[in-house]
Amino acid sequence: MNNVNKESVIHRAKNTARNLANRAAVGGTALMGSGAAMAGGGGFDGSEIVTTIGTYVAAGVLIMTAFVVGRWTLKAFGVIK
Image (tube, rainbow, N blue to C red):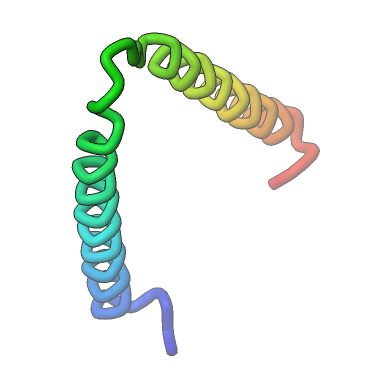
């Protein structure tokens, strides 16, 4: 199969969008179900969880930025193409 032709690109884009929509629907359903189970405790505070997730997201963005800058630098110096 030729991955460069127009039909193939459109087909892959539609499949990717469909997969992302399905994952979002399943994830949203799972999150809605778990909220009721956790609502029983009166002293639950999710701020620590949100802070931890934010920290991990920031670390991930930093790692990806370092990778992109490193790759760009290596391309600029002609080490890689």
